[in-house]
Structure formats: structure tokens, C-alpha cells
Length: 139
Image 1 (cartoon, rainbow, N blue to C red):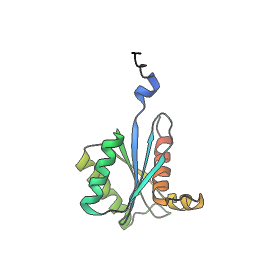
Image 2: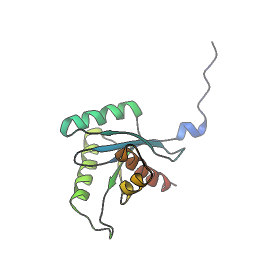
Image 3: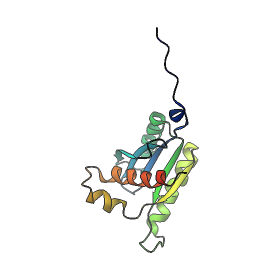
Image 4: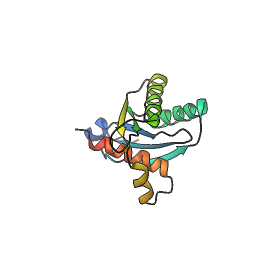
């Protein structure tokens, strides 16, 4: 039997993230890590209430992220609106239910960008763009 290779220092320190593009009807989900610094669309959850959080819990068990990232929408001038407050509440719910750090990212224009790129799953692609933005900001 051959010994398994030890993880490289880079892979040992890479952190995994799940990102969410919150909506009242759907939540786009993406995954990425601090080594590659690129989000990958996973899926869109068209669930609400407890079913939504159960599905998110299953994704957390599968992907084992170190942190969660939630897109927070604002008006073009940066002013908050009702969906801003809803997305922040969703982030607080994630942190309270799952005990993971939740980071907020300004998600203005992510849906427009995902549509312009011809994404098949716009919500998951928007979540990937949100995660890309967060990962670019890491030191």
C-alpha cells in the first residue's frame, strides 16, 4: 500500500467559502476558495422557510466552508432599501443557525452582469460574482 501524499502547504491553508445571492423566492449559491479566488455557480434554491435552511444546511455539510458570503443589494447611489434589510436579515439567520462567520458584499449589478454573460442559472452565477468580488478583496 502506498502512503498518501501529504497536502501541500497551499492546499492546507486554502479556505472554502459559500456565497449566496438572496431573493425572497430564490437563493443562488456558489462555492470558491482562497487559493483559486474564483467563485463557481452551484445551484439555485427555489425554496422558502425551513426547507430553504435545511437545503443550505445540506450544502454546508457537503462543502464544509470556513465562511459564508451574502450579497447585499443597494440602490446605485449606495442607499439601502427593503431588499438590503432582507439580505442582511438572511445573513444574520445564517450566522445564528450555522455558527459560521458571514461576510456582506455589495451586490449591485451582479444580476445584470450574469444576464449579460448568458448564464444559464442567473441566481447561482450572481452568487459566483458576489464571491469573486469578496475573494478579490482578500489580502
